[in-house]
Image (cartoon, rainbow, N blue to C red; front, side, top):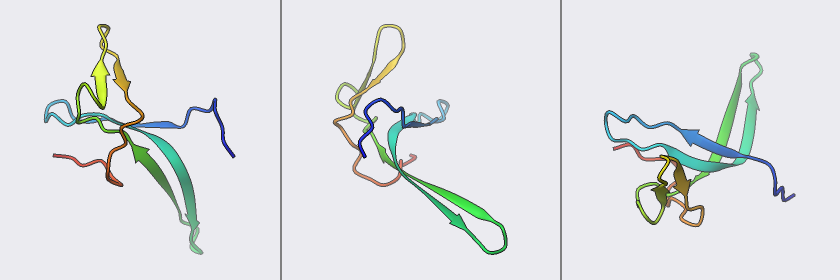
Length: 82
């Protein structure tokens, strides 16, 4: 199924004091694990966009909004924090 109008974007806010950037991506899968003791765990799988390549992966417009280049996928399964 291919949805063209649904917003499935995700954002992980970085720590501006340490220089860590916000990570943006798109949600690709949701898995819910239900255990017999009544506990549930929900897992989210995301494709992350490259926010380290300023000018290529993202740019900031004159109003301070971040524009993400969705053709530059981050080559990892998780955002790396430095």
